[in-house]
Amino acid sequence: MNYHNPVLLQESIDALAIKEDGVYVDVTFGGGGHSREILKRLGNEGKLFAFDQDPDALGNLIDDERFVLIPENFRFISRFLRFHGIRKVDGVLADLGVSSHQFDEAERGFSTRFDGDLDMRMNQKSKTSAKEIINKYSEEKLAEILFLYGELRNSRNIAKTIVEEREEEKIETSFQLKKVLKKYLPNAKEHKILAQIFQAIRIEVNEELYVLKEFLGQMPNLLKEEGRLSVISYHSLEDRLVKRFIRTGLFSGELEKDVFGNSNEPMQKVGKLIVPNAAEIKINNRARSAKLRIATLRSYRSKAKS
Image (cartoon, rainbow, N blue to C red; front, side):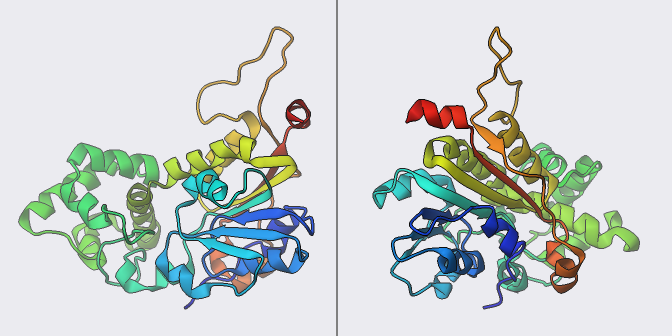
């Protein structure tokens, strides 16, 4: 199966500062590229757990006694690691991008390039697909997700058109949706606007931002002292959440400070933002929007717990 070349491979694994006998988690296994690099750096006593809710990822299993693949959504990371007897880990890697395999399989409905069923489910067992959202959501709800997740300023007009057209005929495929929205797709911007629309629907189908928040919120209690978090994001909505959580430990509101001006944010950033170089982007165009942020537990928090 065609899974993408791992983005920022060396940088994201270097970020974990791997200990040979450490316990690590790759929460977005996909084709297994990042996992294989982690295993190269682990000793015989090391352990790697990986998460992927897409059944197709099972075809990429790694035959290694140090490796365990958990076929679940990474929002449940702490729960399933406890099932395996793990309460603390040395590092967690998340590559939040949709895999090339998912984009290139027309029947998955992720891509604007192919005509396929409007699906977009990462987990094929999920009840809600893109088809349900397009054909059953209210005009107001559609406009809301197109605005919030697609950052489309004309979201209300797009939602109104979808609702009007689906009353005439159910919208079931990618190309049907493109045809319905043709008047909003000028030639010069067709790909960009379609990508924003598909992104918005995909995020809603898979609850991606809620999942990311749940996942990040577990990091302060899951990471060991000096444990590392390495996160690659691909669009501004994800990156803003990651950046804000690392800086404040919050997703909204302001960080509270005591009378002395001290705050108790759980994480601290490590190094600066890392982006792919021109050579990597030339080889793998999908790397162009990637951003890598690295964090660890704040030292005072680790000492207080030890």
